[in-house]
Image (cartoon, rainbow over all chains, first blue to last red; front, side, top):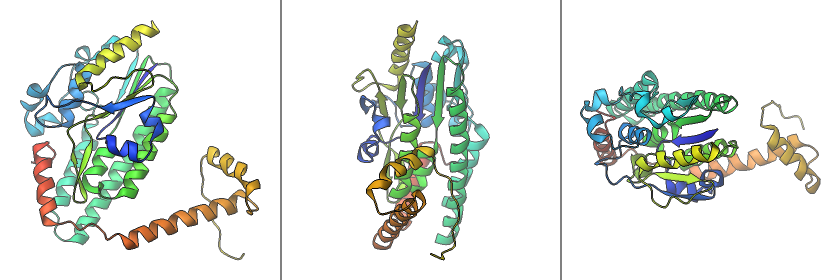
Length: 240
Length: 76
């Protein structure tokens, strides 16, 4: 089984400062996403899944259509596998209703007036994100216990929570520790990556201009997000 | 001790780690050890929160991050 732990907005500097040894594995570093005009979630994960820069195609759908975009299975590298499981990946198996709810609450937060109202909306936003995280964690654990040749778990909590809580270091440490524990529970060859990192704007979080990667066996240097399919191909060939 | 007690669940691996440490401490049980450690952590967090002011939602930061979230497609 080849496993990918896809963690949206996992920030390289925090993985190191929180000493997340399981996330760092033997080799880790930053990805090069400089070819993209902005570090957009749907663009980056679609490009990862297809090993092609999909920015033009995704942006042509507009901001509203972009989130519902889904790539045909045959165009992804998941089609190389007999029995892949890909959980909640943007542009492929994304839980549209869940993430639309998150964006609606995000808008509600910024439309709210007064500290009290904002805190109330943020609390609901956080509850929604944490609840979804628990669902994904359980699905991922179940898939890892089954007999698949490829499993990808996409975890959005670091990104979703980071946008409104990045200045809350306790929460960030808890999230990174949680993701580190998940990484530590995986025995199979593992690729950890993020589409982009996160950087502070006051108490809030913005996407940073690089992602995170790690493997247990290969130093990938500064790979482009479209190059991970080739790494996965080599892993598959080694297993054949 | 007449303090009201409750029950929480923690992973077995943490219980095993506590039990390994017990002989090196003055605690009589894993319950006492866990209660002490959790109390210390909570006290530390409360101290951090009382000395580091809550980050205010400044209008400038809000406008900056809203502009970024629009550019990223999260907000219209």
